[in-house]
Image (cartoon, helix red, strand yellow):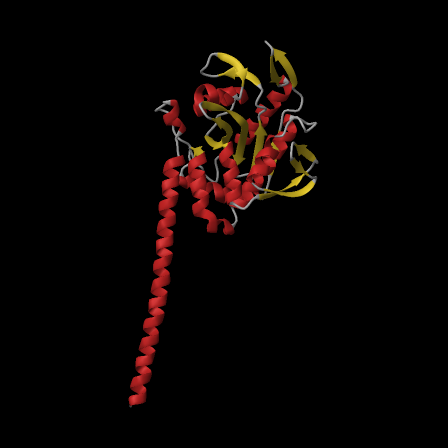
Length: 310
């Protein structure tokens, strides 16, 4: 009888221990989820800047990312300097068609001569951001390509370095041996930290393809970052990643948009078509060098983007 009582007590004791362990793990898990949610919300509150507020158009409706409707994104990589608003070092337009599982990416040469909307001038397209921030850059690109820009993503290029370091670097297939000062990038598969990736994305004059070669490298880095950011292992670095993003990124995507966007991107299977300006010419006007797109090529690009956006 005593043995049975003893066994019963031991069983109850073991049950209590297991309940305590499970309860503790559940509590820790809930705290982690709560902390992560709080951090995500805090970051989203910091980076989310609706374009409608910036433009002052109260009648404009913010688009919502769906698995059906095509949409466009303007990515602005801005070289910010002390006591200077900076210029958009990188301007990439991305159109996404969720139904077709396709994405088109166009890098606009920063010296492209065009009308700056809202500034009453004709200048280099990358000056639009310096003159009027994101709204002027968006309006100028919309007029230049004759398509609506639904979303924007602003990235401080110096902060881009930190983002790549936070995710542990990126690996890309470099198609050309390149050297810039003390930086050397051999042909083939290379792994880049933030500092090397930043220089790699900016090289122009050392590449015989000039700005077009730079566009290819920028696309490679963006694709590599997106690919790595979508892996489960990135969750372990989520808090650090969110801190860096909060300091260096601004966008008008909402949390719901980003969740939907991740789902859409997973179905793309790397199906990204690169569009580029290959037939334009360089020209000096009033002693300033500009890139002048060839009209027929510009019209072809406009048509491709319009069809993709339906």
